[in-house]
Length: 245
Ligand code: SF4
Ligand code: SF4
Image 1 (tube, rainbow, N blue to C red):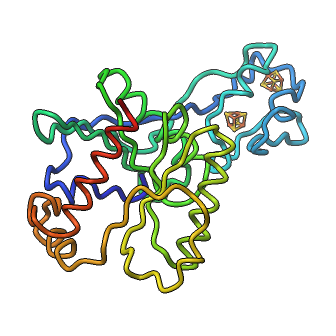
Image 2 (image 1 turned 180 degrees about the vertical axis):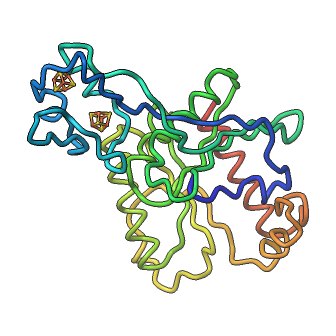
């Protein structure tokens, strides 16, 4: 979302642009009774009330959750919207369509854009949806993972990679989603004991062929189909197919 790059790796470009919006409250002061319920129910503290008692929005703090509108007993909060980014639907080939969300520059909240992007993918009714999430464990990652059958956690066998992997595994546990680990640049490991006891379903080697395929803007399995990395990626795909069906 912050800087999606699948379309670069697939050389597909981005097509089918649509603007993406979130809710923004607009106060109708002629209906407002100054009861302060909107402010009290806003967990982001995005509503302040001045001396004369009318609510006022701090736009950068608002997440667009609509709680204030639901809480207002006087229907004094009307619907406004703010553009937060763009979504795209790009046909890559007969079997693959790429649905991408791109956050607007300077916009901090990727969570609603993840939801909008997922919605756009959902209405297309694909046989299989694969979500490539951002790194980390923020609510935008949790939103992407939600309702998944399982997750593939791709990490490097370094102390930093293992630290992040443990965090994402913890999040998956909370979401009740089974996580499988794929080690990228697996040859980096010099002490196997640093890898916790998770189910590892693939080990992609450190490979110049992968770097060269990036440079060509082609997946390594197309650019160098016989390379060790491609052989391992095909093996991982078979394993993933077994998990799915
Ligand atoms: S939409 Fe949500 S975050 Fe924004 S002001 Fe209303 S309650 Fe607060
Ligand atoms: S909840 Fe509605 S009526 Fe109460 S202060 Fe907010 S906008 Fe005004």
